[in-house]
Each structure stands twice: as C-alpha cells, then as structure tokens.
Image (cartoon, rainbow, N blue to C red):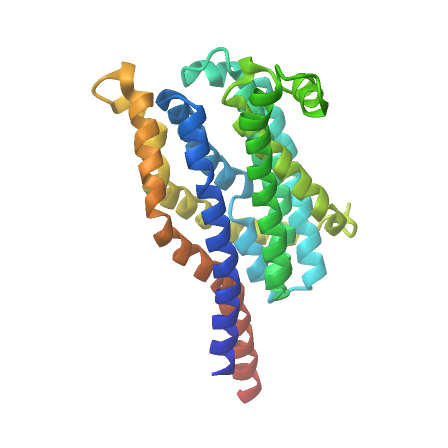
Length: 312
C-alpha cells in the first residue's frame, strides 16, 4: 500500500504540472488564431507534427533504456554513457539536417523556408540533450524539481511567443521608448510564423543551459559494451515510438497531400489543429501516469527480483 501511495502522490505531482503546462500551452492557441491566418497556423501544426517524429529519432528509446539499465548497472555509469551517446548522435543528426535543410524544405513544399528546418532541428537537439537529466530527476523521485523545470520551460515559451507576436508588432513603430527600441532591434515582420519556432528554440536552449551542470560527470571513455546492450534494448522502443506517433500526429503531417482541395489544405489543417487542442484532457491523464509509472515499476521490478534471489 505504501508503494501504491507513493505512485499516487508522484502521479498527482506530475499530473498537476502536466495539467498546468498543457493549460498554459493551450493559451497560445487564441494568440496564434488571432495573429495568424488559418493557413499560417496550418504550417505551424505541420511542422510540429514533424517535430514529434524527429524527437523519437533523436532519442531512439534511450530514455527508457536509461531507466532499465540504471536498475542493473552502476547508475552514474549508465547516466554518463547515455548522455555521451545522445550528445554524439544529436551532433551527427544536426549536421546532416543542416547540410540537407534546403533539399528537405524543397521536398515538403517550403523551398524558401530552409531556416525552419534548421530551427526545428535545434529545438529537438536541445530537448534531447535535456531529456536524460530530466529522466534522472524522475529516477531520483524529485518530482517537484522536475515539475518546476518543466513549467519554467513552458512559461518561457509562452512569454517569448507573447513578446514576439504581440508586444513587438505593437511597439515596433512606437514613440521611441524602451519597448520600441527593443522591438526595432529584434523584430522583423518578414519572419512571421518563424517567431513561433524561435520562441521554442530559445526556451529549449535556456532549459538546456539550466540542465547543463548535469553534464559535468560525463565520461569521455564510454563503455561500448554497455552502449551496445542499451541500443539493442532501445531499438524496439524506437519502432514502437514511431508507431505510436503515426497514430497520434501523422494526420497533420500528411493532410495537405490528401486534402480534396490543395489550395485550402493548410487553412483546413489550421482549423482542425485548433479544434484538436480541445482533446487535450485525455492526453494529460496518459502522460501524467507515464511520468510516474515508468521509473516506479522498473524500480519495483528490481526489488522483486532481489527478493526472489534472496528466497532462493
């Protein structure tokens, strides 16, 4: 019963943070629908669908592998090796995407927006590099600290969106005051929806900087045997992750290719995506339980195995 109470309390903490975070993020929808045209919001929805898939590619199941092997191996060793692996792979994937940004933008119909590819790649890279330090907080049952960092990331993103999309356009042609000077120095109307990605990029980068001290013990002599076993464990999770994301977000990624009228496809996608946000309550419950359950049950499994060994 004590274990169940512990799971319930952690689920409540994660649940509170997730609900607050999702609700705060939902506040961006009225801002976006007021500032942008329907088609522009459709573009945002499309690129965030791509981000969902790329995040799985960048992390490739190593977060769950970290939890699993931390129960069997030295925790610091597993943590250090996981950070090293994700750091190396993130750099490699970023380089590939940077050099192929223009062809990729061409392929998805945004030939003049290669910078979007670079921005979303950096967003995912910083989120990936912060993922294992966040996972370690969950492993150490530091739910409150985890919640504070997560909410800080969300609040930063909301503040930056509000600043770039509402404050700057309002003051860019102002009376020469401080806000006008700041707006004139950082704002360009031509960037448009790009400020949504820039805001996310800045908030992800600041969150990564906050988590950067967690990298101080990273080893430059990785245990390749351990990494091989972790990759073998994580590979099915990569496939499962893509399968789950296909079910959740593929519709927004491919809608413009399947829409009856290609000319209005992005506008229709914008309306659909805004309405989709209303289903947020279901995903909140799923995510909050997963945050608490994953480290909890792996820890319990280890204790059960230890007890069985002692009985034998």
